[in-house]
Image (cartoon, rainbow, N blue to C red; front, side):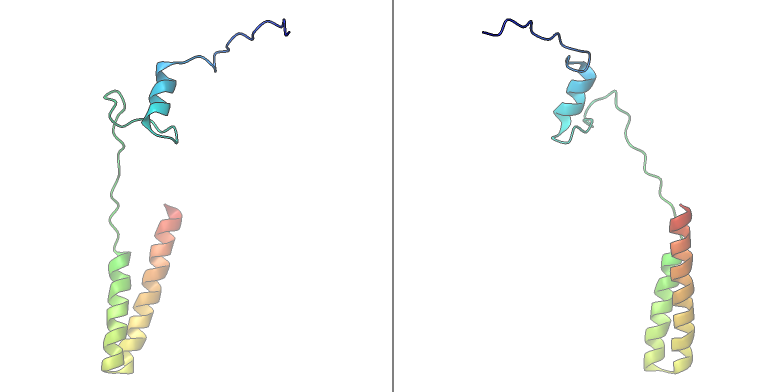
Length: 93
């Protein structure tokens, strides 16, 4: 027989309302969103000109394939500058 005393629960083992709220939401332990005390997540929309520049470059390149090489070259330059600008904006955050 094992006469060792049972271990006392530590603070981490005890059930708390915060722990129950975190684990009750999902299997990943995410905080439930239906809790009125949890503020909603804020998403900030960032507008950027670079997707339109990339689209204009693609359009000019395709137009140049049908018409003349000048439009294609200009479209490729616009496309490349748009990709570089967009990537730079994403890297800077």
